[in-house]
Amino acid sequence: MADEKKTASYHHGDLAAALCAAAREILEKDGLSALSLRSVARKAGVSHAAPYRHFASREALLAEIAIQGIEQLRTEIANAGSIEGLPTERIVNIGSAYADFAGRHAGLMKLMFGSEILNRSDFPGLEEATNLIPEEMGKAIGDQVLGLAVWGTVHGIAILCIENVLDLGQQKAGMNVLRSRAEILLRSLFSQPLE
View 1 (cartoon, rainbow, N blue to C red):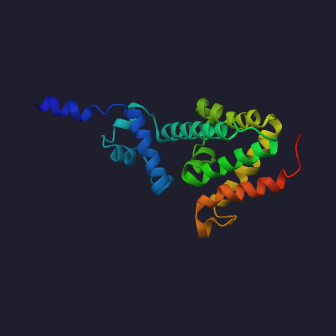
View 2: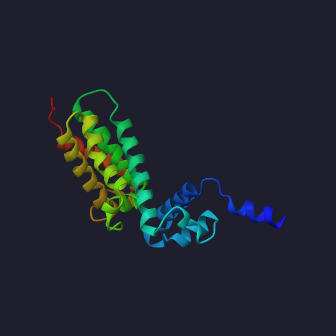
View 3: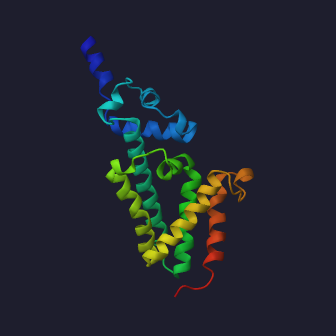
């Protein structure tokens, strides 16, 4: 009977996925400083040693969460870019989707593109995923250079707002305004037809 209880508590199903989900919840609710392997284990309901079965370090766990976040962002970019219409409309749609993602996942954005993961080159999957963002934007817009320019523009706007350096209304109304503010800014930047 004791062996059955021990076995039941040991088996968690997909432990790596449970750890990543717990880490994202901590990240979004309490911030990056609250995220440790011990806090993730506690949140996932496993022993403090369990995360080491899948992640060699906190940085390895953070890299995996960042990769998952980037993949989610790329999917949202691809969906936003699948509309028909002039390149300007696709730019606005993609940029607005990017800003919307940033507003909904501010903590994740800081992790994905911040300096918390010092040795990004130690995680080739993270570098590869990051490099695919402007490629995805370029593909959706139909111009790789323009994709990079749109990424730089909307990312800068989003990060400035997340860090409250630039107030586009988010300090009063909340981060959900980022989508509409990005749309207005992108329309003014790309008001001339690109065709």
